[in-house]
Amino acid sequence: MQRTILITGGAGFIGSHVIRWFLEHYSGYRIVNFDLLTYAGNLENLRDVEHNEQYAFVKGDICSKEDVHKAFAKWQITDVIHLAAESHVDRSIHDPLSFVRTNILGTATLLNACREFWTDGGEHRFYHVSTDEVYGSLGADGLFTETSPYDPRSPYSASKASSDHLVRAYGHTYGVPFVISNCSNNYGSHQFPEKLIPLMINNMREGKPLPVYGKGDNVRDWLWVVDHARAIDAVFHKGILGETYNIGGYNEWKNLDLVHLLCDIVDEKLGRAAGTSRSLITFVTDRPGHDMRYAIDSAKISADLGWMPSVTFEEGLALTVDWYLANAEWLNHVTSGAYREYYDTMYTHRNDR
Ligand code: NAD
Ligand code: DAU
Image (cartoon, rainbow, N blue to C red; front, side):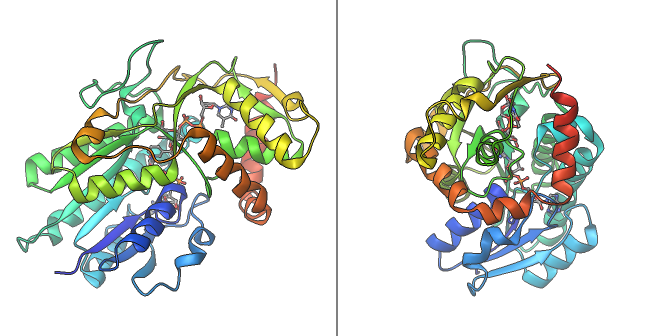
């Protein structure tokens, strides 16, 4: 049986890298990109593969039974890699219900379709791409492992934790064959510039304030998005059904240190005087409920599936900055219109310290 993989959220940041990776490395699969093209989804992210005959795009809503069933029936879907989500923590604080809808109802709608369509006794796999934020926040020490208790603390992470629970419940109750991975912060090309790294690069480019929340001492563990796509490949092909794999970069940075590093890289690449971008740093009101530290123990995926990050942070960050500086048109396009209004509302009221 030919594998036909429904990749949800394929027009977004990580999804577009996963699609490109699978098309480049597996000639026998059909890849169906199922995406609603919300503000975060952009088919420009996949211009280079849109004519690949293994690839098809379907515009659809994961919360719509009709859209999902139509795609399963038309394409005879054998596997799902589920990335579609509302993904930005700040937005979840402003509008939690859209996160409940997309991340919880959407995941359940996909799981129901798997139950209904995968009755042929063939090999199938539902892969939920999830986040380390389900484990809550760490103090100064320790790492999240696959057995860390769930303790989500934002509407976003609570909705992702709910969707993880639903995946396991459908596995346990109905026998839906699943794997889950929980990954740390990704960075790389094509990330929507509401997230820390592309937002900072874009603002440096435009000479705008660089909004650092609180004192900038929160810590994140950064992983290059292509290394996440490689990990997804490993879990999809070699992960044991019913198992969970944590994915991280062993690459912890305090936000302020990371912003300083980015300022210096961008100034150097743009030939600006040292300190030009650093002078744009503005401390703003903290994110409500801001998780202090995330850090992942990737020992299981390394030992069991042989995955390791392939680039250093210096290499990944240099590639990333180069991409944003070379793709001003992409940045201008995705930051026009509705996004601009959202950004102005967020930062006008935050910029009060
Ligand atoms: P993104 O916001 O860039 O992309 C999300 C995609 O989902 C977009 O293309 C959007 O159009 C699509 N989408 C949203 N609602 C939809 C709906 N109702 N139906 C169909 N498509 C819909 O997100 P991302 O950063 O690429 O994250 C992808 C997944 O990986 C998410 O599930 C996220 O929780 C998870 N994740 C992200 C990170 C990270 O650092 N970005 C880390 C770990 C896990
Ligand atoms: O850990 C994985 C998660 O990483 C993913 O599940 C989420 O989808 C993804 O958005 C990301 O969540 P974060 O909240 O950690 O990422 P964000 O880029 O929004 O913020 C990173 C850190 O930078 C966080 O401590 C908040 C801070 N920050 C963020 C922005 C956008 C700022 O100080 N200023 C900013 O303008």
